[in-house]
Image (cartoon, rainbow, N blue to C red; front, side, top):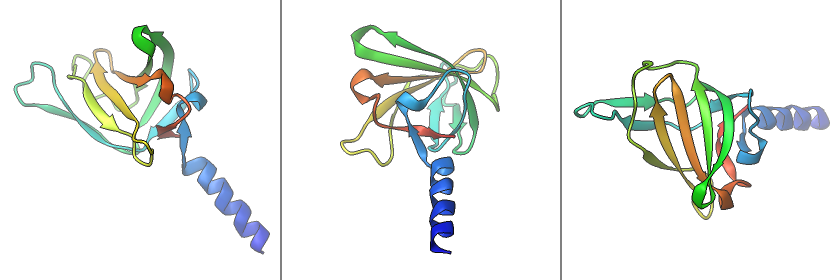
Amino acid sequence: MRTFLALVLLSFNAIAGAVEWTDLTPGGVYRITQGAVLPVRGGQGRTVQVRPGDFYRLKQVEPLVSNVILFSFDIKNCPGPNLQSEMTILPVQGTNPVVEVGFQLEKSCQMWIFLEGKDTWTKSIFAK
């Protein structure tokens, strides 16, 4: 019975737990584990809410200059195809030292997440 319970708990943790940035693969659908409030660009105080539990499909991973990696996601529950946000810095919960990512909503229901290259082997803000 103990072995069965341990296997159930391990399976739950594998499904519900956050994955590392290196485990994210283009085409994969992931559940975001942290929320954020993004100010709409030119929106006179309007904001867009990123809700924990929403699903995103990873479109591509692209290295940029200055050792920064761009993760481009399609948003499953798009707040509006013409909305864009300012970049917001989000600390990744459960990382020590704290890892921060840049969040930005782009037109056509794209979420861009910027990560420093040195942090690619750390816990992400996504779960499978």
